[in-house]
Image (tube, rainbow, N blue to C red; front, side):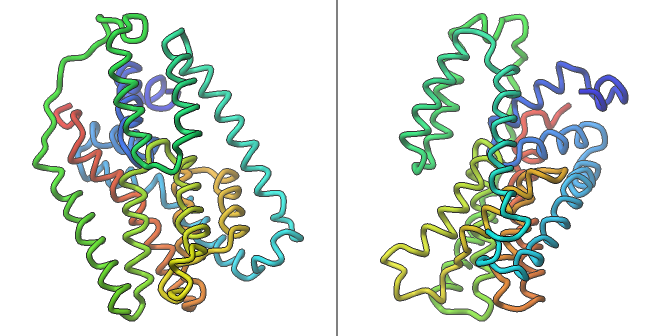
Length: 308
């Protein structure tokens, strides 16, 4: 608000709030999508892509480098090193973000009800991925009956969605999934790189709620899932990450500037650390590209703001 509305006047206050609200409805990195959308409005696709790169690059580089530091320390020594406090710091950052968000978002009775219902529903059904889009749809349906939540004077004109442009997003999703399955079943060389791209592209495509939801999903994928009995005889084909390493990265990403989704750079590096330094660097790159690519495609090709 201070930079783009008050100082630079790239967008109006109403436009910025509309962008933020719209990006909250899409899966992916909301803050990244908002900035990309501002770049798109000001200079088209080329400026949108440049804006995205400038925004994510510092954090991705820092988190990628941090994966090498954690790899050198080793998971067994993290609890006795200076990084032992990082995990508890993450809880403090999350609590602070929750308080700040509460003051902005919970302003009347209907938003209080939505918050309470969403809290209970996500607590009970967190492992069901559909719970997030379902709550968003139900919340939108409920607010249509509340003039206090969305006054008639503030409602914008309906915008046409260009459905044909979503095919690129879907195509990459299908191709990456197919390659990942083939690489695992046929035991391709460097098959974990294919699996890693599919994992992060899928995360970036279905995560509602930003980095606070992404981190638990990665814990489930790379920590809990490999320990399941059905993978007992297939350890070599499964990407497994130590819990302490992943939680340390989750704390560190909160302590640096930039999007929380940049933790994918760290996780990608940690996931391929046993494959050698070159593969670890490749893992950092795969994590950075695959996690932010869905956010970019959804904004550029699915956004109803394409005509602004």
